[in-house]
Image 1 (cartoon, rainbow, N blue to C red):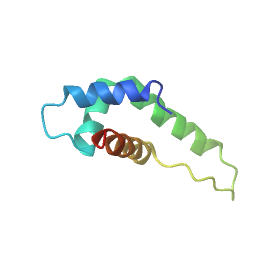
Image 2 (tube, one colour; image 1 turned 120 degrees about the vertical axis):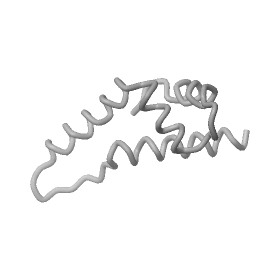
Image 3 (cartoon, rainbow, N blue to C red; image 1 turned 90 degrees about the horizontal axis):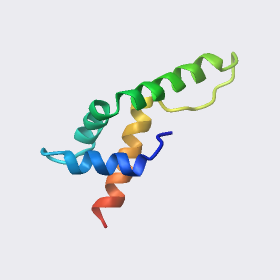
Length: 80
């Protein structure tokens, strides 16, 4: 989970000079918030290691999760 996600995505969106797509937003997030990205990957890694054998709990990879959040944000804000 990303703290202050709405503000961070808006800041990235407003700073983009290129076409404002899911990919450019994703790259912008990685460049602007490397510590947040590291935290997402660390959380995923810890969760993956803590699973008990034979039990699966679906948790999307950090890349998939972040892209989904960006996609949802873009849809919500393009229609506004």
